[in-house]
Structure formats: C-alpha cells, structure tokens
Image 1 (cartoon, rainbow, N blue to C red):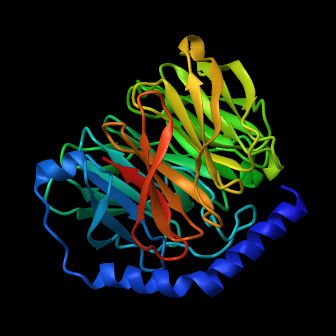
Image 2: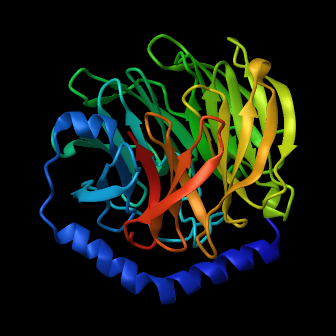
Length: 393
C-alpha cells in the first residue's frame, strides 16, 4: 500500500474516533443495557443479522430482520467471553482494525454462530436454535490474533495472523462443541509477513484457501476426510493485494485491492481442482473503484458483491458458467460519504444486502433485485467504533 493511502486511512480513522464515537457509543450502550428480546425461533432462522463489536469486552449484537422490508430491530447484546482488539496492527488500518473477511460466521446446518476474539486468541461458539443466541464454548484458536473463520458441514477453520501466522482446524460435534483436529495447525507460504485477509472452504469441504495481502499469494490446502491438511500449494495472485474471497460452484473468486490505488481494484476467479491447484479463469476484471476488500457470491452463484472501502461503494459482478466474471455495475451501491464500508452479508433469501459501515458506525441495507441491481433500503443500529464482521439469516 502507498504511504499516501496509509496516511489517508489513519487520518480518517482518527477523525472517526474523535468525532464519531460518542453518539455511536451511547446508542451501543443502550443496546447493551437493554433486556434481550426473545424472538420466536422460526423467525430468527429466517430473519436475523449479527454484528461483532470487537471491543475489549467482546460481544455480538443481534437484530431481528424484517423479511419483507429488510429493516432491523435490536434483540440484544451477547458477550463472547473473550476480548476483541482495537489496536492497529502493521498492515491494518484504523477504519478496518482486523483487516479481514469473515471474522463472524454462521453454520446453518448446525445452527451455530462463531466469532473471533482477536485480543484473547479465542473462538466463541453460540447456539442459535433458541429465542436468543446462547454462548456454549470459548476455545483457544491455537494461534495469536484470530481474524477470519470458515465453516462447512462439521468443520471449522480459523486464520491466526499474529506472530507465527497459521491456520488451525476444529471438528464440530452434534451439540455444537468444537474439538481441535490433530495436526491441523499449519503455517502459510508467506510466513509472518503474509498479512492474510481471508480463509475459505470449498463447497464439499475438501479444499481450503487463504489470501495473503502483503505477499500477493493464495495458499491452497487439500483436506483429508478428518479435515486435516494433507497437501499445501501456493499460487501467485493474478492481481496485487488479494483480500477477500468466496467459493462457489467449483470456483474461487478473489477481491484484489491493488495496494489501494485509485481506480484499479478488481476481481479474479480460479478453477479449483481436486488436487488443490488453482487455474486462472478470469484475470483481474476491474471495477474502477478503490480498495476492493470483501467479496460475497449470491446464494444462486450468479452474482458477486464487492465492498470498496475507499470508494464507499459496492460493485456487482456476474459469475457465469465456467467461472468467468463480468462487471455488471462498478458502483451499484453508493454507500455514503465517509461511511467506509467493510464487511457485507446477504440475507438467506438473497433479497437484502447488509453493509457494515465503519465510518458512520451503522448497518446499511440494500434491496437486491432479481437482476442483481441494488436499491437502498435504509440504515439501522449505532455500533461501537471498531466493530467487525456481519452475518445474516
């Protein structure tokens, strides 16, 4: 990243902390101090949004989602039992402290919510089959500063970026408890200078991928039937600064920030074979925005949504048969002045896109049309400075 871009991030972040924290902090406190609202289980299964506060006393904020309008109603705040991390790390920035995708993830098959505790090196597990989220376990991440999670079936993997950067796997029991997978902790190709962005598991759970922002690499791991890595490969990213990633229909799609240069962000796609080797299918399709970070493929595998933090926009790409990408709209959502969008989430019916706006400390909502076009539907919640991660049902 250029020195100018780094300085811009830091100045903006300090302005947010100095001028934007008071109102968001007070509104957040009103959610924390409120008695949690109990919502019928079936309503939560089909209409909920969760955000992680990443505070020293880390918590998950829960919202009930209106399935027709997309609007959000606070349910309550639920402590993770661990600590977030508000410290700026090398390679990260004050408006995006963890600098990662998927710090909060849902496993719908097991009805579980997983959250990282970057300050205490732990993972928290919440059960979601009740009227409110229930914390059932806090477990070591087997590394330092966990920032990203990936889950598929009975498998969970965590990406730790601190000190000896590594990945580590866990099996999920029927009751939701995690157990470490023996010999699953592995280092990355880029070592301690990798500055990783995201960890992703393939649809069938046989492959694992990690993006490395500072070394422009993508790590691939072949997993055996127990979830343990058997083989490891590295691929040089087609575009610079590979950040967020998602997997759909046999293809890995990767958002590329290109050192946060103006107008050159893009997305590449790769075919993933059983061997774990990646083959480029679409090389760096540009969206002419700045700082492409998180990427999310629609549930039907047709569209890919990308948040561009410095452009304060969301781009929409098409993902065609054969894994070929096309730019549908560079700035499908103009997220707002000084909003600095980071994490994004799709409702389980695919009708609403929820955007974590770190500059205004709230959640922006956009309606998703059948053609992938976005229409603004409001903003909700006041979140604490430093919040990271958002998921929806």
